[in-house]
Amino acid sequence: MDEGRLDFYFFPVALDKFRPFSLINFDLYIKVENRFVLYKHRNITITKDDIHTLQENNVLYLYVQNKERKSFRQYAENNIEEILKDPTVSLNVKATYIYESAFNVVEDIFKEPRSEGNIQRARGIINHTVDFIFSDSGAFVNLLQIRAHDYYTYTHSVNVCTFSVALANRIGITNPTTLKEVGLGALLHDVGKSKIDSRIINKPSALSPSEWEEMKKHPLYGVEIVQGTEAGGETVFSVISQHHEKVDGSGYPQGLKEHQLSIYGKISSICDVFDAITTNRSYSVARTPMEAAQFMLSRKENFDPTLLKHFFELFAFKKTTPP
Ligand SMILES: [Fe+2]
Image (cartoon, rainbow, N blue to C red; front, top):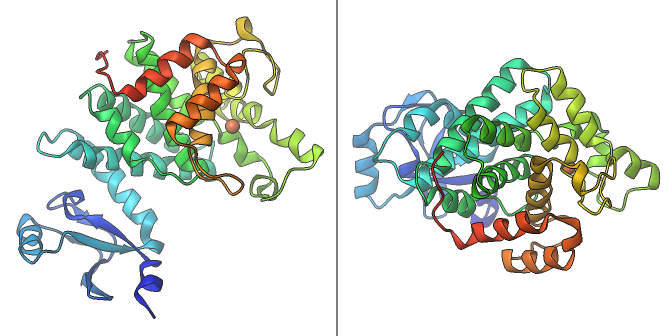
């Protein structure tokens, strides 16, 4: 098996992404020339001395098998609290823990959307995300930098969540409870897709008219799911039900217009479109943020102009005000 083929089965994890003395629940490998060699079996801890010795031997990354990606994400979620409160840990590492943990939770929510345990985990991640974004002016930039550039429902949900929280705060929403509701709604905005036949969701070609009618119901399916859980709240419902509405009334599922839409719905609509067009899809290549701005401005009648202006200002990476 050649090196390129082997790389397909492993992903790298920088040494600084392991929390010393934490329990590692997956096998760790080292890359030696073109081979991956087992370094430690699962259910071990990795010590500061281990990390130091690896660094002395110019080993900067450990490798994990792709089939254990879920375990890696669970590891991130298990350790996120300690990582986020450690002042010696870099923003990049903290952003990675947030991203992987959020992905882990969203994946489980799509499998079991009515599980109260999963909703509680989502609330936990949102609390961490909001606190992180306002802990440091560079935090949002770090989340932007590590975001995945291939479209996937779970990563899209995490991206829309971080964008929505940042935009809400930028327009002056500083109440932490409201920001966390916006974030929770955004994290769950596509959960209604879990009720739609996967053959429609994953269809690589254009949807038939009847399939498209079904697809357009996912915002309302999402509200139905969330209404039966502790995640329910007006802000959360607005984000989920209105994320495909447009201020000129051309959106779906209800074709609501400007004055009928909540500010939270308008925020989620901008963030949803931006993330969708700046990630690679099966039918289109990712636009750069600048190209996305031009595209969205060419359709500015779809969006609230003030929100759109503030959204693109986020990419100037200016300092945000803590709540
Ligand atoms: Fe959607």
